Length: 302
Image (cartoon, rainbow, N blue to C red; front, side):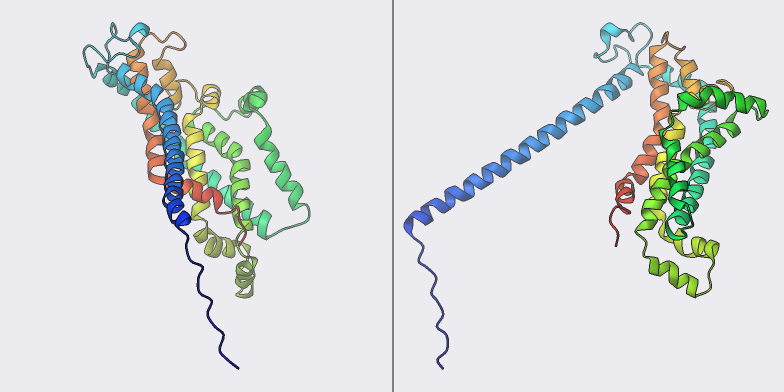
């Protein structure tokens, strides 16, 4: 039997040679236009986001006469740091109290959500789905709807007002979202890993602390960022249970600095807003790159 004969490629015609450069050029032009439009939209979005930051920043360096609505977009005639000094003097106590609030409330709610998510995903029991649904139901209850009954409950129980009460509130109201995040993440953890731990003699608590927690870092990053930001920026709970600006978190002190709705001291108010936003900004800078990855880590089972 003779060997198969290789088929020679069809010759390229002159018309195809002439059309090839124009085709590559057209593809390049389409790519350039698409890329340019994408960058234009990104720059426009960035511009919209930075407009309030620009106003905050330049107003924080203006004196009382210069910080006028008619000169909102103009640079200060005289740059001054007095606004920052006044804002820091009034907010430093609230910043410390906010840190004492957000750190324990974030950690405690993350640990409780992790335990709930583990039990509801890997140690199922009769009625587990009903319990999970009831926990999630807390996410859909507006704070405003329960604030007055909750206030009466706290008052009748003689719990008192201040940072400890706010920690309790944020832990309780953080359980639904933390449970949801951790349950979705643990659903992606191979069941064989849990069964192997059982074979080795590990109980539920031992499996949770020795096997599950070490692989839960992505979800912990998401939950800690979420809870830290929610507790730090909260004003409603702080207003009802903070005990006033002298014993409450930084949001109450910032509101006191702004003189409620009068906003008499524009420069100090803008400086205070920038100072109060620094901790959350640092958290996102340090952990932001893990945030999206942590959110998506439980989206695909593998």
